[in-house]
Length: 465
Image (cartoon, rainbow, N blue to C red; front, side, top):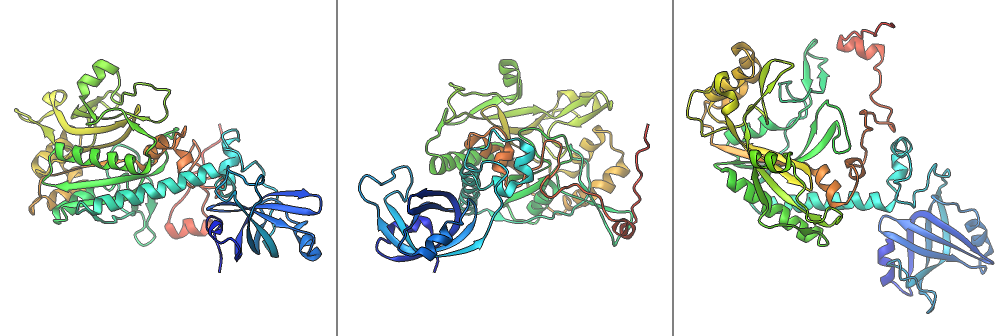
């Protein structure tokens, strides 16, 4: 049975079987030492000249070869212990070696933190890049964070429900990624920008408390804190007011930091709260960095920004658009909702901010189908288009929809900050480049003529100028 490196320290005097990668090889005269690496750490293996055949095989070993080693766990002599690693008090005296796979020399150093290596190389050979301890730690903390969130919300009576990835293209702010349908030629699915409509329909269904670790897709320009596909914590609650959702969010993230990131210090508790007008007047931004010492990587300044405008004027398109999204409830309107007073209307919308980044947003939703239809009209949609694109939601709202609202913090951006990383690519296993390419898989890629024919799609090539 395999022994993990971290467990070997408890097996002094026993014979163990370890498997992993050759991290480092060192020749000391007649002795050969290797550091064996697995996901849990490193342990020193020693090959002595008593067994010439074994020593000869060990002489062939090179970095990153995959091996299986049997040996006896021994305590290192005083003066030879290594306090820098968890297994520094022991070593394994090898009695058997099996080479499971040889390896080419990596194209770059995987022992360093990797910041000095070009992105093109790191992403093309991401499976090598992920071997470095920093990235493995990032993936481990991502897993622990998601597991903590799931457990915390389950204790609050939330149900995790998966919503469809193949859905309908509707205007929600960014461009959709579209997927052609083979069975329904000329028609297309869209990948969800968020599970917005599905989670609202779950409230109509009586679920009341829903969450999901949701994959979302937006065809927009990428940057350091944005990717074409990303992960968010999606939360929706029935019969909840804004304050209840913000309190739930604050309690969740306070507990998360205290349990998983105890080295971090939250600047202010309760979290700061500003109206949109206040933060723009005071900080000239709706995502202010409220840290007292911006050079302190362990300081976390959370804040909520509330009372956003409902609409913003799109000068190039000559129309009003929703600041958040059209499903947001208008706050305390006293007159008829129309284009004439669109700029005066405020929304029950809130953003969640951390250290100068927007890490989430949400709102109380409009559950009156008549008002929701007026909002779409203000945004320049004809009644026929509204019915075609959102008729399913408007129809559902006629069957007893509870007041509801939610919030959706971004997992990637949150972990980027908590792990002190410069961009979200460092906390995602297989990210895209700045221009949306996957260098390792070489995507996006062309389809074969046969695939295009089956989908009844014709590609128009751009004419050379």
